[in-house]
Length: 219
Image (cartoon, rainbow, N blue to C red; front, top):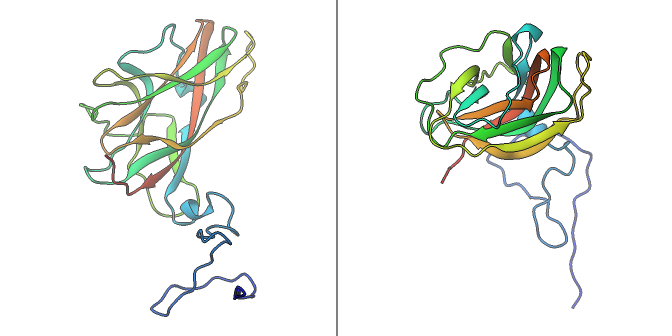
């Protein structure tokens, strides 16, 4: 018995959702053929749920620390959603030298708070900002804050390192790291950041983030 294979041939077009029956695209092994046309990540930005930001004013950069942090994050991205609200899924992280003369080499460390932040930030830290990645009017409730106390015993991990020179090369850094949403910040929690490096001569660093905000059943 032969296999009856049927396909619909048409130009790519935007199809509005409605009550009419729709035919889903499937692959030859019966998996859903999703996002075969749109660029990766397009839909989240189109829906206005992706945000970009970080340091906007060099003078507001963070100083390096000489040891892996314990309960103090030099900088934190706090999720200001109410309980049951959207979770922050961090997709990209990066850092760069903003000013001063650093020591050679630097490493970006990050953590997710094991508990809600006890003293919630009330406003965006001076010199930092967040913007919708698609220009949507949707606003984020997330805030950048400095010197944030992380409750519990957070586990810090290395995000990326750079073999920076011990020289005042403003903007030197490395490629951003793609986390693909593996770092999730629940409502009321925060992601903490710090730069591990030598003292140098008054170096200040900038951190940049890309994150999506998603309704998620966190277990």
